[in-house]
Image (tube, rainbow, N blue to C red; front, side, top):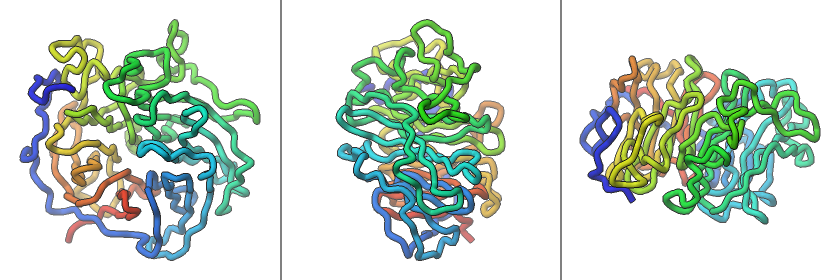
Length: 379
């Protein structure tokens, strides 16, 4: 454990409970109140419909009307998903950029015997159908998991058409296997793979411009590394920037701007503070967090999105993130490498599990109890 008093190596103050002004212009409105969900992990919109995932292993399709009482089980893989640990289960969902024509979508789930993370492609019966075929599963990759925690789980297609995959350090506490700084393992990294044009027996290709392709003893799939548990990341739909929230050990949570080939410090650093060894470390070559906050502010950062919707003009260009324990939702701008207009937007009182973004750029908040909320202007 890092002492909370350890000096930060990053050029920013650690947030405290009283260091942020509170915005008066944003609130949450409940949506899909006529529906019931359990253990929500994702909300994605594709082809005009919403899709939510439940940790136990279901993908549910919902019409775009947020007052609807209709819902369809799009995919049910509960029989093959291991959700025994609170960080295991159906964790990620991403739709192929050509979903409207090919019906392909991708899921990330935990499996057992042996314990592993699985990224698979499924295909809808027809591109505009509300169900997917179980027998259409094509396993893209399987990653052995030494422990039940720190699985990462986010999937998203970047503006380059590549599939990005978040993997935690393999779990336990303190990264006992040293995976965060080990380029020979996929663990502790955000991966970038090409799943276009794969055949029935092949999973993916490594893009030729990945930073570690051809580096001795390094996995070419790695885009960036040094993460503890990057539970949620997202792309800014306007700039293409990749933002990630990386869950800390006991003392610091962090938000990172992820760049090609970047090392994000774990387990040398937790946030911008030395972790191993705790009395001094060499941060050279490390991408330091954009912001960090201490355990007095929360316990598990939930990475969100840069707001590009139209319902809340005052939030334009604001990166939003939350915390599972505090229920607070914060936002900030990054201008010239400096964090500005950092505010507490909503003190929700929710156990926030994830954020979602619709096709119009509006932002949704998912809670542990199955609630779905949309950000709206207050007034």
